[in-house]
Image (cartoon, rainbow, N blue to C red):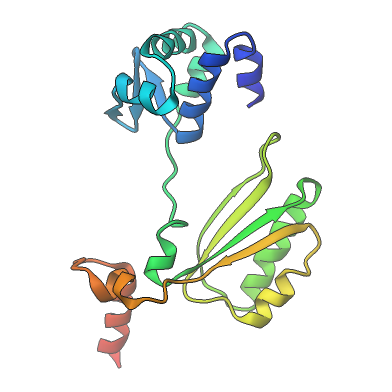
Length: 196
């Protein structure tokens, strides 16, 4: 974000485009915008961002002609995450807001404590950028025991804890309802039943 501040301070509309590209992991190469290797239509971007297409073309040109920006934006990629699909898969998500000064210590204490209590972690997604709140999301296979949650909230450095629980309606849980041929949780459960 400091790089964007430095290079786009006199171009607010271009900055808006650059922030959108950065936050969504869209790269800029050869005069075009890509989501991984798929070209993203400029007209659709202009509609979503709320700027005209000319601004997007000017932003692309500016990025490609500014070496530090080009080096960053050529390498951007979106990071897939299980956070939003976890509740329908029967997994819990621990959402944590941390104090910036305590970020590293609090996160390492949390992970140590989860390990000591045999809590199965599927994914950790965390950010501690200068201009944003420090946040972490931990996807847990199953549910977090109440006593573990109560101890976690006492770790110094946590500002806020939210536990997103699995979908209670079985009609909305992927394995029980739809016709998914390969679901990791279903395969594991069927494998356990087969061994037994």
